Length: 240
Ligand SMILES: [Zn+2]
Figure (tube, rainbow, N blue to C red):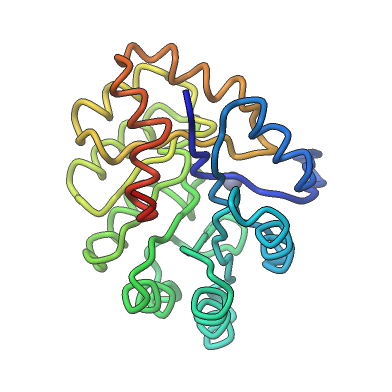
């Protein structure tokens, strides 16, 4: 079944993670798992740009700013979207140490609204990236589509909160990489709406084989799996 990977990285991640993936290895994984396109982020942004330029039909670029850079972060967003063809913004409150709904995000969200592009935000780690804070951010910016990457991640209470926030705020989308419960994929599809939950790998942090198997084990029928694997990300990114 053809797929879009709604969240992946390239590069080296040392320290506790000790994982890495090159652009070539990512494309190989995409070929092996029928992943037509990947929504990619990297730091530095230039690595994502080089990867997208090497594989323009396969890679959708997200610009990954540090909101604490202020005006420089906003300039970077406009440059990458208007001049380099990137299609969204990636934010990680855990990496840059800000609470998801803090004021430091305001210029970023205003740029996203102005450019009419989605914001992909890491979720699942207290105190910075909890689903409730992402909900408060979505509430302040109802016109910006906000993708809650990992839909709460590994903690059952956070996963439940991710579903609750998505039910409450129609501009929240859920991406499932690293979230361990296939049953929650079906529950999200059935209770928050058919078009707001998406497959992703978080390469190189999780293997595509495991992430795909979660959808296949979720109990969704074939039409629903097509939505989760492909159609929903395609619609969000205006590919169809
Ligand atoms: Zn990630």
